[in-house]
Length: 440
Ligand SMILES: [Zn+2]
Image (cartoon, rainbow, N blue to C red; front, side, top):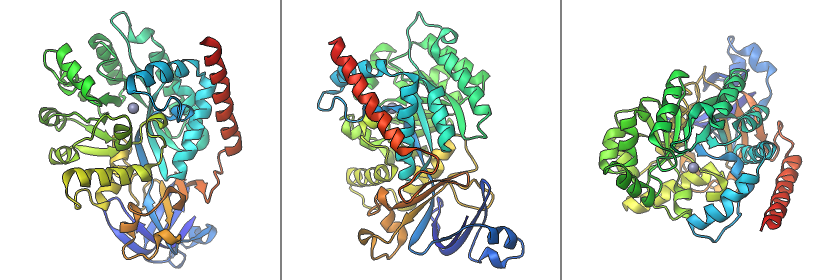
């Protein structure tokens, strides 16, 4: 595809009006001011490609949703109006127990469709049945780093657990996925695993050279109870002593991180994933991004699962992060548009160990999103970057491309059967509700 006369807004904050972007195969072949149809080097390729008129449109690198539990789209809106503990114990866990691998596959496709529609080209995920999630990832064409969330007690041995078997099988699937699917190790949280099991997972991650995904200091309860359990150590100090951060890690939430924690984390390849909507909706609190920034820690953005958000819309997540932090800091200049885009794309890609994406340049993967600026609420335009995270809605996203393939365009998903996916989501809801009623 050849994008002509399009404004490119890049992860480094550069705005480039009236540019041409030539995509060939999986990569961006050319990005520049000149029409590649007039350049001898690109003439032949450019002439053969579909021309996409970029007037009134802005191209940005695709978003990376750096923390998600994608099959939880199936639980969207279920059990609302309960306090966190009751919601989890009485609604979420019993419902999750009824989900089959096939259900997870359909729930994943539902979430992937939603993410593609909001400009997401890659995501991190922690859940169960990751082979079924992996199948949905590969079939859809989106990129993902999947992890099988581990939790367990002193009686558990990692290599006898489903988490180990699933991770091994998913690694085989990853090897045949041409880089779309990467597999990480996954540790649910400090409070849900004992040290010996965490140690076994860590040894395995090192042996298999896997990255790590973990929940960290999400709630005050979790943070303070950890200190009581482990001689005053915070979850970060506890994990650092176990050697967790020796493995490149993406740590979600970090609402209660203390200065000492940030001083530890700055020494490691750790990406913090800020999930503002989930933290607000669950009443967890507000993370202190200024302190994270001041400690030079890489910050990414994530939606968390759909049942605590309640959507997977990264555009909304960016606006939420921006406004809440500006209000918290009483500083309208905190988190510029360029910084927000960097968090939502480039930093997310680094959290996945993906160095050929999260930015737009010749030679990089063609993972990109086109925002349409023609709707009334987007006009007039003084500086396109200013409209992007203040006025744009996900309905303004016209196209999402991953590895050079169009996966979403103007309300349709070329790789997905959207009617079937929605039908299956409704079927699963009805079936589970019936089972729950029979059990009660
Ligand atoms: Zn989570």
